[in-house]
Image (cartoon, rainbow, N blue to C red; front, side):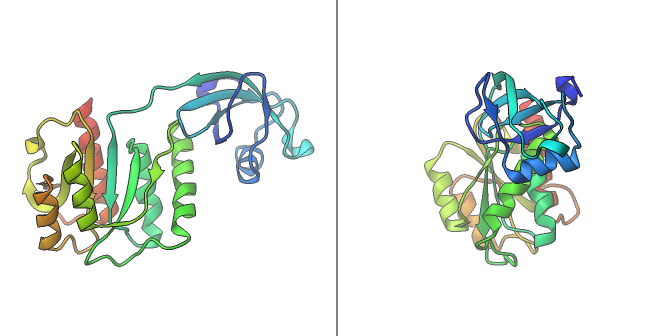
Length: 242
């Protein structure tokens, strides 16, 4: 495994410096040694979640040496994706949250904000942040993305509307019967995508977001699950920016 294009990525939030020897945390090292089965001489990539990527090489076999240090050979600062794309989304049921976080990261979001809605069933609890952080790290590794999105505290629809009103972002609401996506206009600046729970936003919530400047966007004839609607709306934004 000597080509950078084939090298697996691992999360390492420490400063990455050429010539430095650095150790991964236990979970990442387990992934390196037991899941990816890296061996002595293999090239791996380390990312700090802030756009910095380092190539490093294993000097010994991790099966025999335990959590050995990695020797950093090269460091690059990758361009950060922009402009900002935020997903403000009600939580799907727990078993579908990995799909939501994984697709949002792959589609390049900078920030994910859980949304408390009138029809919300799942809630962002004490353990949710750590779980979502792990899901985001895994999605970064899979998609070879160097920027780890920030995970914001949950907010109400009224708070989300107030934040949009104070910003210069374009707000898009996934909502049945909304305008065709092509009517959303220019999407080169910051975009905030709003997705409701199963059962959708209540009308008062949509009105509050619209009063703050957001626009209803229809995503087809069917009723989409929360994570599907989020992926569809984010994908639309990404394609419009190409």
